[in-house]
Length: 142
Image 1 (cartoon, helix red, strand yellow):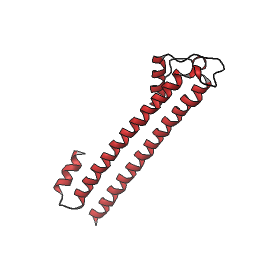
Image 2: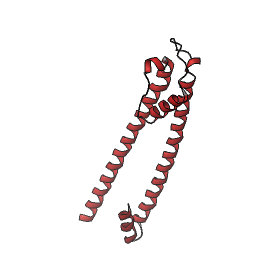
Image 3: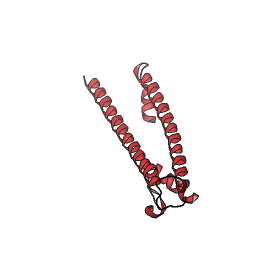
Image 4: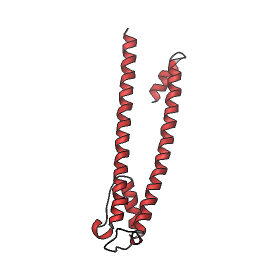
């Protein structure tokens, strides 16, 4: 990144300076998106934690399982929201059907979908950078 900035300031005024301004705006947008993603993850942790703590009062609990202990509920919520999926319990004897369906399955899907979206964005970024580099090489060779 520093190399790019030095190159921009060595160039004459015009397009390179505009490119720097655009890059900075894109970086700000990416940071804002990360902050929004963090807020959504917080909401996911709180929702899953609440679901696990209240499972004894929810429907779809035919075994009448009690609520998950606070430390285990927090550990499970953070684990599944962040896509580590680490379990320190036996799912069939600890979680009700409602907790497994509405909590664990939903968070597993959402975290995987977020990962796929990040990979797609990364590939698009590399493709754009490659295309821009190819255009610059073609322009300088002519």
